[in-house]
Image (cartoon, rainbow, N blue to C red; front, side, top):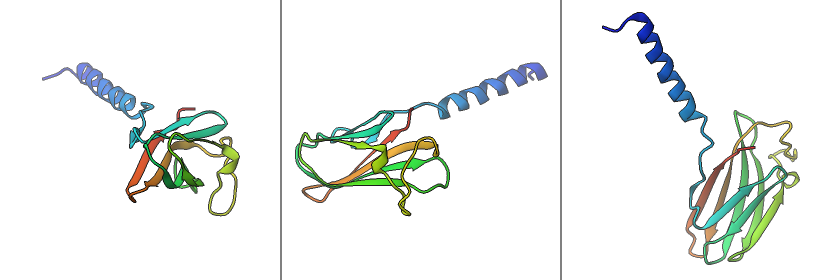
Length: 128
């Protein structure tokens, strides 16, 4: 049987490990070999590395919590094309522009379709 003080140390260590695991910035997930996403303080950069054109490219800034999502769309991106989307291009469904001062962001999601109609998706955590 563990002493009460030893039990407290084990519980505290477990809590700290859970916090550390949940707070990690994380890496991009999804089709990162076909779409590269870079976040800067003023824009979101999207590069098509799929080897073919992408259609209906949607870039969505995901807020932390129940707030509205902010979106921007690009109709077509050719192979190797890079698009720098300023934060002012993103708006919610009511037309309100995105401002990192007003919204706490959890990440960015980029979706697209390739020439065969296959859906592609990349999720990048917000690290700013």
